[in-house]
Image 1 (cartoon, rainbow, N blue to C red):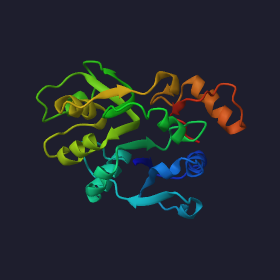
Image 2 (image 1 turned 90 degrees about the horizontal axis):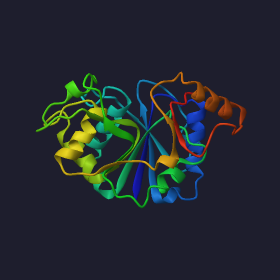
Image 3 (image 1 turned 120 degrees about the vertical axis):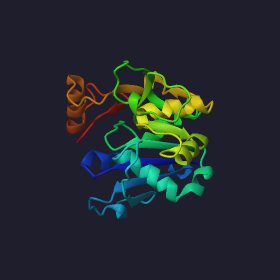
Image 4 (image 1 turned 90 degrees about the vertical axis):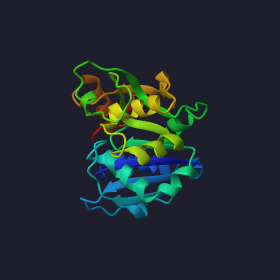
Length: 232
């Protein structure tokens, strides 16, 4: 079984639509699906979903992240034994959009056994700010990942939980490829035909067209690909 872990600070309409599509997917029985929800906020929607657990949990202070991604560090420290019960663990931010159920996107990568799958992995500028956050590695390179949606093997997640802020230090986008390299774990990108616009820039004109498609229930510009960030 795999785990799908979605991260959120709130329950905006489009994120709820994402959860509804997952909850109604006939293949959901093959997954443990959880939403880690920041305890700083208050919502009560858990009764809307039959197959998804809404778990309120604190963010923690970590070199890895102090915001949404710190929630799964906290959660899996508390639920360490559960890690070995999964083959893979997916981490998905609440503003990742896919027109259909995200389980369809997830299942399209079933044949690939890499320890870390991300939407983008590669060289970074020598001035990239997160490289300097790294400590504890034999060798540091100017490489990074885009971490808005990721798949970890159980082995990689165990390495992260065991070592973060003890032996390894650094921001998630920089530290993850270094943990893989240091421990001979594999890393690759998602299938390119499954990836649309994936960026941290909210103001790209084409993203505005994707948002308009979603709001108007049209498909003029939206393909069966993942997009980020879609904040609706």
